[in-house]
Amino acid sequence: MLFGGYVYLLLRPQYTNGQVLFFVLTGIFMRAVLLFAFPNLSDDIYRFVWDGRLIVNGLNPFDRLPSDYIREAIQVPGLTPELYASLNSPGYYTVYPPVAQAIFWLACYLSPNSITGSAFVMKIILLAAEAGTLILLLRLLRHFELPLSRVLIYALNPLIVIEIAGNLHFEGLMIFFLMLAFYWLVRSRDLPAVAAMTLSIASKLLPLLFFPLLIRRLGWKRALVFFSLTGLLVLVSFAPLLSTVFVNNFGASLNLYFRQFEFNASVYYIAREIGEDYSGQNLIRYIGPAFAALTALLVLLKALFERRASWQTLPVAALFAISIHLLFATTVHPWYLALPLVWCLFTRWRYPIVWTALVFLTYAGYGPNGYQEPYYLIALEYGGVLAWLIWESWFRNTARFKSSISTQK
Image (cartoon, rainbow, N blue to C red):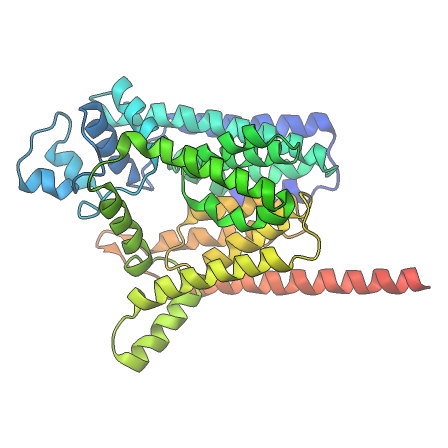
């Protein structure tokens, strides 16, 4: 029902600036309503609180596994057996970068004894970030002389509202800082862009994927300075969390992401089945890293061989990069689609909208006996997105062909 109303609003032919503002405020109001809803569709909140309570007590969340505290009977205020039982990954080291960890600390400092209270603090911060994102999107659309109504693609999208404002995922914070960096870059304000990009990476590491696309747009000298300063500031941001075991533990969690985790994948599942038929075992430990390397190679090739590398075409290239990443990923959670959706605002491509609707099918796998992945629904999800993408490509090519014929006449 939500997506039906959402699509109806997107298909309306024209909006005045006043109407756009009204619907943007409506989107903010929808997010504000969810301040008072506990994130029941995700259990990540419990790890957020676990990490935050560790930092409040002066402990580094990267030093030990949650299971270590239970096994060794280490007493830490707030780390209760009930909280531990709610964790979805007690045997894995945390993977959340410093900006996210700072918010976990603040939430647990302000609400030390209530998970609901800590969630509320985090939601206020994400609500502010989402409001900032919508303001930045309006300014960027105006800068590129694109219809302001395109902001509704992000402002009213049910997945964005539910997964970021409702289920408390920090893609919203990453996207705010990423769009802020993009905003400063198009205005040739490199230093503010460096600061914003640093905060985006320190919220989620994924913006690193777009760095090759900046080289030709900045030029080699500016790019070298930009990358060096950003890298230095990212290291500084990690400094409070550094310890003798940080690199090994953080690297171990990232390694597990590529070599063990599986959820809602597409090309990977096909490769996995072929690998199992060939070898008799799951080859994720080889396929995951190989696909990650292939993604990096394809993004680099895209960066090197773009026909026209400009700030105007960066969203198209970035949409390609994140789509390739998700295509070859072993894990694609619904909230991962926030990034391709926000980039598509500045392009003619609309398949991310279809994807944000169909990815909700993955929730059908959750039941009283745990999660059983519904492969037929995954096939429906990716088949629907692929069908739309093929139609969209054909339609664009046909329109371009007709336009060229008309011009020749």
